[in-house]
Amino acid sequence: MRLALLAIPAVRSAVALELARDIEYHEEIGSTQDRARELAARGAAPTIVVADEQTAGLGTKGRRWDAPRGTSLLGSWLFRPAPGEAGVFVLLAGVAIARALEGLGAHDVLLKWPNDVELGHKKVAGVLAHATTDGEGGSLVLGIGVNVHQRTSDFSAPLRATATSLAITGTMVDRLSLLAVLSAELDRLAVDSDRSPVLAEWRRRATLLGREVEVTREGAPALRGIARDVAEDGALLVGGERIVAGEVRLVG
Image (cartoon, rainbow, N blue to C red; front, side, top):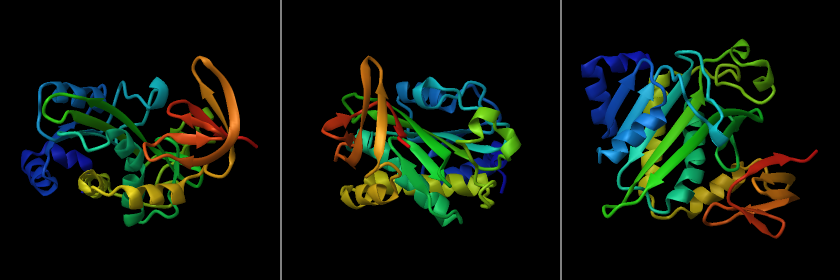
């Protein structure tokens, strides 16, 4: 079933009922993340904002997330109230994505700290989050982009060495099915009070742990060391330091 079928009110209502969330579908939008944040500011109920194309989508560090129309799952999930320990939840959302992809036929999905999902050691998905606090438990907007139908030629030359899609890796997935499966995995994670098994799974899927990395942080010298572990709060432990933000790359 095509994602664009969400433009039909009856289909959208049926899917929303199944997922227990409001769904707002756009053929084209600047950013699903910006729209979901607008809804959060208005006190909206749990919602998924999904689009066939973004004209101003952003990824990590404010980089543009470009995808030809109809090639990616582009969605932002509004959680209200925010899941407990929202910072860790954002990290563990990678596990939910990995489970969803493997449930639909992908194999050996790996995770790169803090928010990249990889297939064949190339990025296939990413997570972007924005949390707010208030007297009613706050909210969390979780933006997720998954490369689904792209061909190699759809990526710019610089990205071809680091990005991939489900189609390129041989997994043919319907985006509406992926939306449903992923939403179920995220909601399961949100209500799970014991995050320890999920964090252990994150560690098993991690690409950086036990390897030498270089960390680049704004306003600080580059740091090299062994990525030893990820802390209970989601910080990456490199040598004797805790890394909560920065660019991390493998050395060698």
